[in-house]
Image (cartoon, rainbow, N blue to C red; front, side):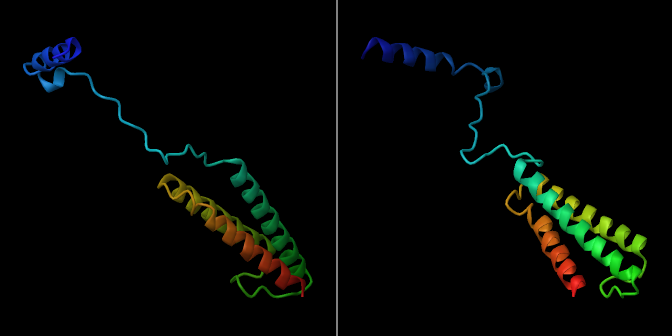
Length: 130
């Protein structure tokens, strides 16, 4: 038996009488796929900016149409101020849903509410132009 093996054996035998709570904790290995992901990453900021521009364009054309006697078919109100307030609430709900998905670890899904709002507001803008 080599000297190193004897030292290891003596060390292991000495640990038999030690309580487990007296031993130092072993550090937990980090998962290989754990990525630090910020909620306000550069991509998220860009998507929110595009979402805000799309919502602003949709509300501008909708308010213009309402002032010229047009009719809003998707919302129960025909007032520009109330329409903007409802859209701000929907915008806040989309951001809250994205944050909830982020906090629960669904990082790939957290952009879906924002992307949906971009599509919905773009559709509303194009529909209002005609």
